[in-house]
Length: 105
Image (cartoon, rainbow, N blue to C red; front, side):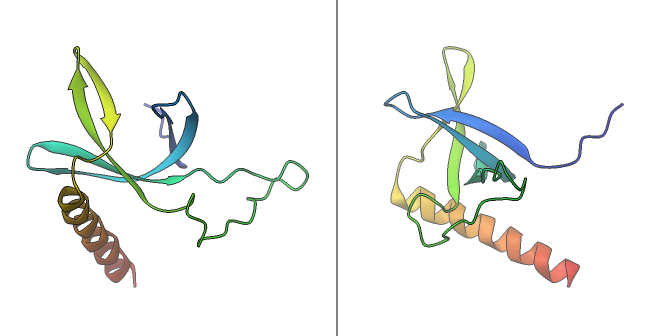
Protein backbone atom coordinates (compact mmCIF):
# COMPACT_ATOMS: atom_id res chain seq x y z
CA UNK A 1 0.00 0.00 0.00
CA UNK A 2 1.29 3.43 -0.91
CA UNK A 3 1.27 6.21 1.68
CA UNK A 4 0.45 9.62 0.23
CA UNK A 5 1.70 12.60 2.16
CA UNK A 6 0.76 16.17 1.49
CA UNK A 7 -2.46 18.08 1.12
CA UNK A 8 -5.63 16.76 -0.44
CA UNK A 9 -7.26 19.03 -3.01
CA UNK A 10 -10.89 19.10 -4.08
CA UNK A 11 -12.25 20.99 -7.08
CA UNK A 12 -15.75 22.36 -6.63
CA UNK A 13 -17.96 24.08 -9.18
CA UNK A 14 -20.26 26.89 -8.12
CA UNK A 15 -23.74 27.54 -9.49
CA UNK A 16 -22.24 29.78 -12.20
CA UNK A 17 -19.97 27.00 -13.50
CA UNK A 18 -16.76 28.45 -12.00
CA UNK A 19 -14.25 25.88 -10.68
CA UNK A 20 -12.41 26.45 -7.42
CA UNK A 21 -9.65 24.33 -5.98
CA UNK A 22 -9.82 23.86 -2.23
CA UNK A 23 -7.37 22.23 0.16
CA UNK A 24 -9.04 19.76 2.49
CA UNK A 25 -8.10 20.48 6.09
CA UNK A 26 -10.39 18.20 8.10
CA UNK A 27 -13.65 16.28 8.02
CA UNK A 28 -16.11 15.47 10.75
CA UNK A 29 -19.42 13.70 11.07
CA UNK A 30 -22.19 15.46 12.96
CA UNK A 31 -25.84 14.35 13.18
CA UNK A 32 -25.23 11.79 10.43
CA UNK A 33 -23.80 14.33 7.97
CA UNK A 34 -20.17 14.53 6.84
CA UNK A 35 -18.76 18.06 6.83
CA UNK A 36 -15.56 19.21 5.13
CA UNK A 37 -13.35 22.09 6.28
CA UNK A 38 -11.26 23.53 3.46
CA UNK A 39 -9.19 26.56 2.52
CA UNK A 40 -8.82 27.99 -0.97
CA UNK A 41 -5.75 26.43 -2.57
CA UNK A 42 -2.70 28.68 -2.63
CA UNK A 43 -1.03 28.72 -6.02
CA UNK A 44 2.73 28.57 -6.31
CA UNK A 45 4.71 31.33 -7.93
CA UNK A 46 5.90 29.86 -11.24
CA UNK A 47 9.31 31.54 -11.02
CA UNK A 48 10.22 30.56 -7.45
CA UNK A 49 8.04 27.51 -6.80
CA UNK A 50 7.10 29.10 -3.46
CA UNK A 51 3.50 29.73 -2.37
CA UNK A 52 2.22 33.13 -3.43
CA UNK A 53 1.53 35.63 -0.68
CA UNK A 54 -2.04 35.38 0.57
CA UNK A 55 -3.90 38.26 2.16
CA UNK A 56 -5.70 36.53 5.03
CA UNK A 57 -8.10 39.51 5.20
CA UNK A 58 -9.21 38.98 1.59
CA UNK A 59 -12.85 37.83 1.60
CA UNK A 60 -11.93 35.20 -1.01
CA UNK A 61 -9.56 33.54 1.48
CA UNK A 62 -10.95 31.83 4.54
CA UNK A 63 -12.30 28.62 5.94
CA UNK A 64 -14.87 27.00 3.65
CA UNK A 65 -17.26 24.50 5.23
CA UNK A 66 -19.33 22.25 2.99
CA UNK A 67 -21.36 19.11 3.58
CA UNK A 68 -21.79 15.88 1.65
CA UNK A 69 -25.26 15.28 0.24
CA UNK A 70 -26.70 12.49 -1.88
CA UNK A 71 -28.36 13.53 -5.12
CA UNK A 72 -29.42 11.00 -7.75
CA UNK A 73 -27.24 8.38 -6.05
CA UNK A 74 -24.15 10.58 -6.30
CA UNK A 75 -22.30 12.26 -3.42
CA UNK A 76 -22.00 16.01 -3.91
CA UNK A 77 -20.67 18.85 -1.80
CA UNK A 78 -23.16 21.52 -0.82
CA UNK A 79 -23.23 24.71 1.17
CA UNK A 80 -24.89 24.55 4.56
CA UNK A 81 -28.62 25.23 4.86
CA UNK A 82 -28.60 27.91 7.56
CA UNK A 83 -26.40 30.26 9.54
CA UNK A 84 -27.23 28.22 12.63
CA UNK A 85 -25.94 25.03 11.02
CA UNK A 86 -22.81 26.86 9.83
CA UNK A 87 -22.15 28.34 13.29
CA UNK A 88 -22.62 24.97 15.00
CA UNK A 89 -20.30 23.09 12.62
CA UNK A 90 -17.74 25.94 12.59
CA UNK A 91 -17.51 25.71 16.40
CA UNK A 92 -16.99 21.93 16.20
CA UNK A 93 -14.13 22.38 13.73
CA UNK A 94 -12.56 25.13 15.87
CA UNK A 95 -12.67 22.87 18.94
CA UNK A 96 -10.88 20.14 16.95
CA UNK A 97 -8.27 22.53 15.54
CA UNK A 98 -7.42 24.00 18.95
CA UNK A 99 -7.43 20.56 20.59
CA UNK A 100 -4.86 19.40 18.01
CA UNK A 101 -2.68 22.47 18.73
CA UNK A 102 -2.78 21.81 22.48
CA UNK A 103 -1.79 18.17 21.99
CA UNK A 104 1.17 19.17 19.80
CA UNK A 105 2.36 21.96 22.12
